[in-house]
Length: 115
Image (cartoon, rainbow, N blue to C red; front, side, top):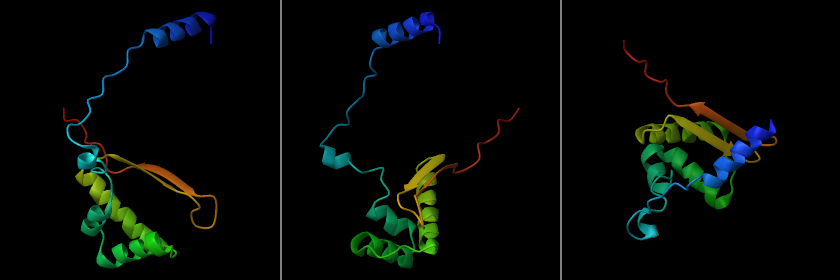
């Protein structure tokens, strides 16, 4: 990187103005967690067996089978698509047999522009 470019970058950083963030109205407890795949969303998007197995894992630390995990992922995908999401990233620390899993993928194909 040339020194001129460094100076330009420093100048841009110094002169950068922060983006104004509009704080939602109301109490934080009114909107906190609204866009989270929480228990209400789990009940809606998971079948009863999967929901029960997930709660058992969350509350009693019972092992989660790959089949249940796949069912949870499918439910989360449907929930995300219903909220207008196009990308999904998941991280599982200490995944099956090793150092964990991390993935990111497109939930649906982009629509082609018509000519």
